[in-house]
Structures are given as structure tokens and as C-alpha cells.
Length: 385
Ligand code: FAD
Ligand code: UDP
Image (cartoon, rainbow, N blue to C red):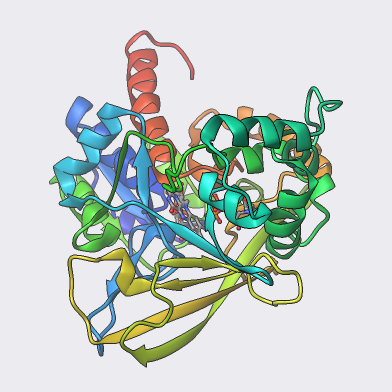
């Protein structure tokens, strides 16, 4: 049994589980908008959750410890918010993909199309060409593969998406939601920006410093290496939980499926691959992509380099859950957990893990900002949320 009343000051009113972007923004907004005090706990030894960055002690390169993170959003209020806490430098993610035929540009754009088909098409010609390859019989894509066949046709799908997706998700793309692919644009111009967002960047001193600044407020206390236990709740007016939803209920209905990723690190001097992210869609290559971290901070100069070769596997009980799979069986289980969650009147569930959705940083930040406003207004009106 953990007695948090021994460690918490009697004025602390809410407990926030998780010191990632969701938990940090919740704590800051509650502090600034309503002068509410919070204790933020995290089971890990650092803040910032999966966005954690740190400089390598030997090379000084900023490492994205849990995978590369590029900030991008269309919401001006979210962009203004993060810029209060960090010096975001312009960064455009220009991803490349190595397949048997050579190195190509992603997302699929006019360069990819002309290079892959050996053509010299104009934007209008390329659009017509791809429309002819697309499967027009698919009106409402029911899964990842149908989404691809409807928008880019079989050749591009098989070359760039089928093998990568099988490796990344460990199942047939026909089992996966179409929404996973709709994250990526298809363009009939030479614009090779991986994202369509109006605002994009990477913080000069990494994400952990941004989260540290968000958490730096007299109303916020942070306690690391502290795992949530249910008896902690009784010392607080409310709990905001941003860990895995099934974990909160001790997996009593079963486990939601997640993919986890792991990396093999390569150290070298000079330039390892000439780009921040190189994808490997070929199913015979065992890894999915390689990140070379110093290319995420092009404003810095480093002689040494560190590249992380990324592999994907099914999540075991001790692995960090990274990607919610959202297979049909997961959705049924999720619905059952949501029913249990509704009965937890003193607990709110937010963030990528607690809502079991494939959310990016800007989305969890925006949702935390919006949620605090709704929660405060409901509280003021004596309503439940
Ligand atoms: P998390 O960051 O997962 O934080 C949750 C925290 O809760 C963790 O620190 C965890 O330790 C803690 N916790 C969990 N359970 C407990 C418990 N029982 N007790 C105490 N603490 C607990 N987004 C982008 O915008 N751009 C990108 O380029 C991008 N790249 C990504 C690459 C990878 C490989 C992955 C996996 C994700 C990527 N994302 C990206 C998504 C981004 O990581 C998430 O949107 C973000 O981390 C979600 O923040 P969160 O606070 O909801 O969750
Ligand atoms: N994808 C693919 N080939 C690629 C890149 C992406 O098949 O070269 C698919 C894959 O299923 C992936 C999804 O598109 O999970 C979304 O890609 P994104 O780069 O957004 O994934 P993330 O950065 O979140 O891992």
C-alpha cells in the first residue's frame, strides 16, 4: 500500500498519472486557469513520456530516445502554446525509401511517380495516370489495403506500403484500419514534405526541456519512479490518468494489442545515410526504418553520428506500448473498458494510451487544452464530465 498523504502536501488537489505531453499540459492548464495544485507522477525515471530526448554523453547529439519526433500542427493555438515553452526551429521531414529499384521520395509525390514508372508526367498527367491505376470499385475503403488501392493503385502499394505495413504492424494490411494510411498525403507536385501541417518544427533543446518548462510552475509537483496504485486516489479530489487504459483496470477484461519498437544503435563518423529518416519497405529487410539523429538538428554540427535501426514486434507484458493496433477484437475490448471507465467518476482518461488512439503530439496537447476548459466549466456548473 502506498500512502501518498505522507508525501503529498495537503493543498494538492489533483493527481495526474503520466508526465508526458498529456499530463504536463493538463497540470499547467489546471494551474494557470484555475490555480489548481497537482501532483504529477510517472513510473519512468524521466519526464516527457515517449517524446523524451537527451543529449548523448559522448557525442552531444540530441537523441529521440523512443523514436523520432517531428512537431506539426494546423492549430495556431497549439503552436503558440508549445512555442511559449521552447525554441522551435523550422524542420521539414523529407523521408526517403530504399526499395530494390533504388531510393525514392516519400510521401508519394510527383518525383516518386515519375521515378517509379520511368515517366516524365506533369502534375495533371500524373493525377490522371494514377486515377487509371486506382481501384474505382472501392467507394468506402474498409481497411488499409483498400485505402491504398483506391488512392494509389496496386504497384505503388506493393512497392512502398504492403511490406512495410506487415513488418510495422505484424499483420496483414487488410486487417488494419484505413485511417492508418490516411495519415500520409499523396501529392501530384514535387512537394516532398512528409506532413501537410501549417506549422512544423523541432525544439532546439529537445522535447524534454519543453515538457520541463511546462511542468515548471509553483502549483505542480513532479514525482518520478512512481507507479500509480488505486489507493493513491483517495488523497485527491480527482485523478487524470494518461497511462494505458487496460493497465488501469489491471487487464481484467484482457489486453488491448499494441506494437512495440526497439532499436539497434550504430555509431560512426561523418554522415551515415544523408537523411534523418530512411524507410525500408522491402519485406525481406527485417527492419522498418533507420533514423540518423543529428539530421533532426541541422543547425548543429557534429563530427560523430548515431543511427538507430528500428524493428517492430508484438508487445509483451514488460514492453512499452507504442502503437495501438485497433483490430476489430481490440475495438470490442475497448468498448468494454470504456464502459468500466465511465463508472470511475473521480477519474478522467486522456492521451494516446488511455484513449487507445494513434495520436500525435499536437493532438494530445490540443485535447488536454480543450479538456481542461470543458472540465472547469462543468465543475463550475456542478455537472459531471
Ligand atoms: P506518453 O508520452 O506515452 O506518456 C504517458 C506517460 O505515462 C509515460 O511517461 C508513462 O511512463 C506514464 N505511465 C503510464 N502508466 C503509468 C502508471 N501506471 N503509473 C505512472 N505512470 C504511468 N508524434 C508526433 O507528433 N510527431 C512524431 O514524429 C511522432 N513520432 C512518433 C514515433 C514513435 C516511434 C511513437 C511511438 C510515437 C510518435 N509520436 C509522434 C506520438 C507521440 O509519441 C505521442 O503523441 C505522445 O507521446 C503522447 O503523449 P502522452 O502524454 O499521451 O503519452
Ligand atoms: N507506411 C508504409 N510505408 C512507409 C511509411 C509508412 O507502409 O514507407 C505506413 C505504415 O503502415 C505506417 C503508416 O503508413 O504505420 C503511417 O506512417 P507514419 O510514417 O505516419 O508512421 P509513424 O511515424 O507514426 O510510425
